[in-house]
Length: 225
Image 1 (cartoon, rainbow, N blue to C red):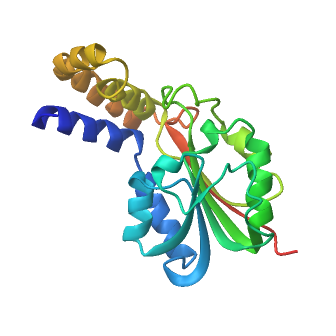
Image 2 (tube, rainbow, N blue to C red; image 1 turned 135 degrees about the vertical axis):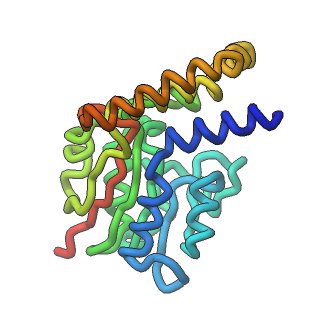
């Protein structure tokens, strides 16, 4: 990958994950999850999120359905039977639920392994193209997430960006999705795409609206009683 291709790839990832890393770092600090004094489970292994948590000194036990990602345990989030009830102070579930066949089963399992008073920190996309197909099954609205996590106390649920910023993110994702030929065409048209994306982001400032967003970041707490 050349310098231009690398820059466009990083730009696309940065826009599609806007505010996500900062939100994770904020939650880590707020709940004092760094160091080895807390039991933390990360649903998903390796990748950018694993690297970010490591950089924040969060000592996680990583679970993933894919052994190729080298998790500590190979397991499906819908069945975390390898862990007893109330095993963890915190669970991270970042950009995972859209890939789960039964999100309600996954949430029940995460609730089960959380200790009373523990927190579930997560994110999920909304206006974002299909990725990691064919295992990309659904998108969640704010109301859908509240319904899914009804057994928890909502501590934080916010949009990662606004309607038009989400549209701009969809534009720049064209640099990294599709066939190799489609990506080459997108890179060839990158001046036009970037100009349109910049104009669309300006609209987000002039016409702010949270009815559409790239995704949601959330913190839900397991009730103490």
